[in-house]
Image (cartoon, rainbow, N blue to C red; front, side, top):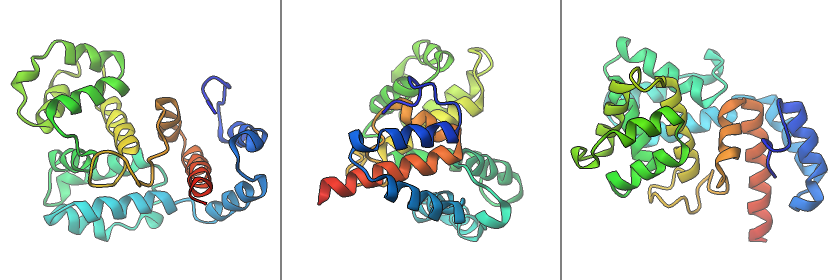
Length: 223
């Protein structure tokens, strides 16, 4: 199932693709439609689940702020929008932007700086890759220093902080909130192809539908 190759441009086209792929992908059309309807009743469910994940991993004032955020009242319905909100609110609360990035890294849980750079290269845009090529990996002692470096040279290599944020979110979804860094047993562990993760970041409706799809596939494998 590859939404990009199938020229899927919006959630309606993706639903059509998923319905037509039901038999091949071994999930029920009825179950898919029932669960889409459930999520439609609460479009903020998965973002709030993401908030809870961050709150569990965070510490100090950032943890307190995450515990207080009302996703539904703020109408935050994508992961990217949520992280944007955290970054923008850092100036009004007792935490900084670096702490937000460090929290994402903690959940990604790379085994080393080298492993973190490899993951960045896997999902990064061309500008980020060029910036990594220009750096000496030995100059970084921990992953957050790689992020700090990329933010400092973003303009020179023609990429934005938003692009880097998207890459980190893709990495997080791939690795999953397991605490082990290997993605086993995570909520997102079956999203193992970059194109699918890209679709998840792009449109919140696609986030919901793909999570449902892979939940069904995982459930059927465990039966």
